[in-house]
Image 1 (cartoon, one colour):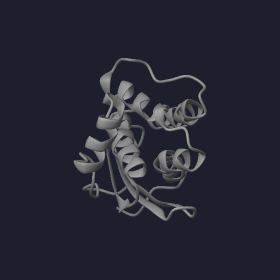
Image 2 (tube, one colour; image 1 turned 30 degrees about the vertical axis):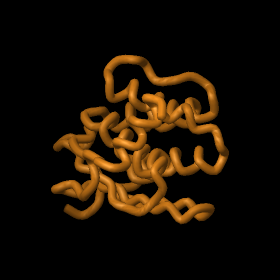
Image 3 (cartoon, helix red, strand yellow; image 1 turned 135 degrees about the horizontal axis):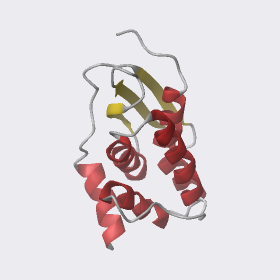
Image 4 (cartoon, one colour; image 1 turned 45 degrees about the vertical axis):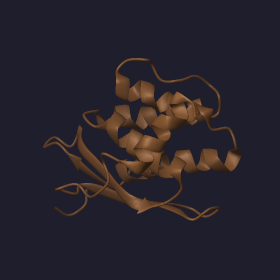
Length: 144
């Protein structure tokens, strides 16, 4: 098993961001009908509603889907909402073989491990959490 595969497996087996945020300002459920993956995201924003303070996920899915969700949560914490939305597009492009994330900071460099996924249905699994993030950030604030 290579280093990228080990990183993906580690984030699947021991996710750091599985659960629900203390406060839920945005949330969304994403599904992949092809394989049955389900991701529920909850997002906690700062007081100005511009920065993602916390992002957690729950759900059922394959190794790729859940590892991608955990890596995404790690990468977008502390980012401005507009930066996170830009990262969704950058991730989509990376999964299509059009570039990669910078090697620093480490939480962004880790996302490049998902480039090893090339099967079209598995790419959908990797993208699910990202598209769910985009949908959640595009919605109005949830009740507090």
